[in-house]
Image (tube, rainbow, N blue to C red; front, side):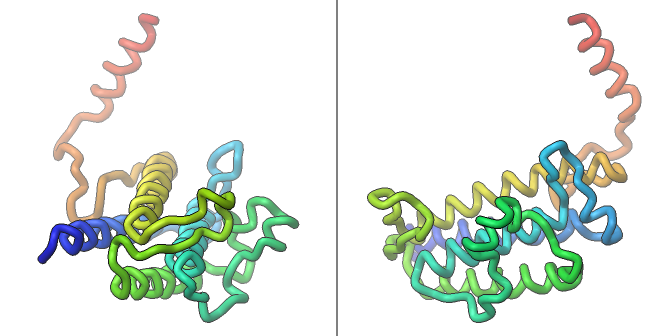
Length: 195
């Protein structure tokens, strides 16, 4: 396996792991909890899932000349003109089950692009400024991975605030076992109160 193939495989595995963790962070909550705005800017868990699906359609589809087959599922420029947060808001008809299925289909679509191209394959991001819109698959994989991990981190914090569920992933939570969180939190508060 060449260095490029090894890097592409590593990036694709990282994307898949991030997607899996995003889905896991949404499991076990009801529709209302997933839709409820958790920050003053309206960040909500189901909206983050919808956003990431839209991101992958654009970056792994349009950027490389591939059109998502069901254009009615794509948040259009006209939708964004009407509502700048349209890709962050699940409509009433977009249930959790539907958006999870949508994200799975989008992930498969994105993986088809990744599988069919090399890291240096050229693309053009339609919404980036002219002169800075030329890119490669490798650059897009890193770009989407950064976006995905940022949003999974946001989801992780929000989810912990809802019901205490936390951890890196379902398979490897990366949290100490039998840890006295109350004592730890009190220690942090004591230190903070000194300032």
